[in-house]
Image (tube, rainbow, N blue to C red; front, side):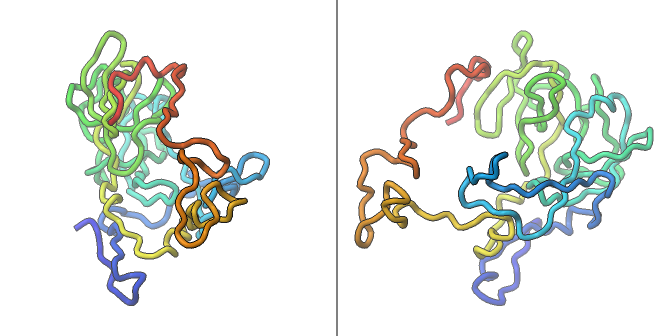
Length: 278
């Protein structure tokens, strides 16, 4: 069982379901040389102004783990998995690997990886969980994650817990990838990807149980526009449960939000999308 139901000691824990991390992680202490401290500016821009509402600094202190999304400078050098660890900055688990030259690095942990397994980033690596190789050498139907958008740009796509893409085929200089959303898009076949799916797939089964657990994560309560005053939101005011009072759905600043396409049609990647998500 990958989830654990918390024993009820009150309303906050009666419906709580959390991932049983002890079944997966092998080390509680992170590797200190790969930790850095980030300046807390949650929800604010470079000028210190709040640009994202309902966000706050996390209740608990976090240190950022430096994850290597490139691996290209370690090409053809095998590495051994030493530990699988929890990362407070992302939904997936991470793994500490030791390369044959003695250097240690953090990578995203794929589902099913174990301590002692050997991984490698290589042009013609074996099709094995955790190995990283270019899309042109990956067989059709293989599950992949941590995909580069452009060659040598580092893994940017499919990095959240339990997600994976599927290699659909090749077409000229491009590979066809089915994304977790159902979208099928082209990515240059020289771009690298990792075999497998991202760890901690049980993350989506969690039930936090109480509002306080969201506060610990830095998520403040979201206030409905209809619960605000007229000066704070276009939906505000009225007696009791008043209707919206405006024909089109709007945000706090009066911009229309519903029923219009938000993707820029002049975006260069538009031509690389073969099939839009539903």
